[in-house]
Length: 214
Image 1: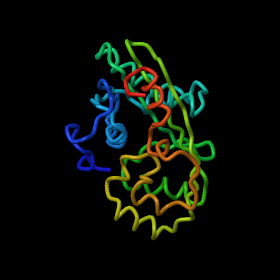
Image 2 (image 1 turned 60 degrees about the vertical axis):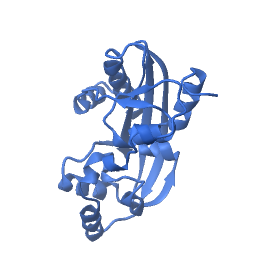
Image 3 (image 1 turned 120 degrees about the horizontal axis):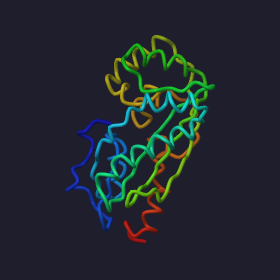
Image 4 (image 1 turned 135 degrees about the vertical axis):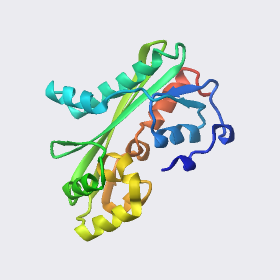
């Protein structure tokens, strides 16, 4: 999804009674929240995700624990700068047969990831954490299982040609809402979780807190 796909905040119908802050530079998450009727301001948290993942893995943390640690760190960093605001931090991790995958650095890395995932089932673990007044008030971790069909090298190259630099913005080198749908034979899990945010549980809690009307 490109920045052009995000409707300007002024053109998005708003149901929320107050704005929320997204501690992320993710275009997809920002778009999801705005389309759901939230008034959202995005701030990049300035977190070195690779360093945090290495530390978590060295400490023996699970994929779920690492995703939660990253989401909490992002939210807490931004929450310290916007007292009184509801701040959403989120993270998504991909695990396949014990290997953790990151966003590919270049086309060659994307091709390698697709070869490694080809014909296998992997997990997407997605966590969201909500801060208010510098305290964590809610979190949710969900997972989805995706089975990638066997991919030939010729198809991988054609897919990468068509998808372009978009493959570098997503872990695993795909975006299921676009050309990435061509890669899979089976998907089990919540649509929003796959896109990077457990949206429905988040909206439910925001209604409890009065940020959204009930």
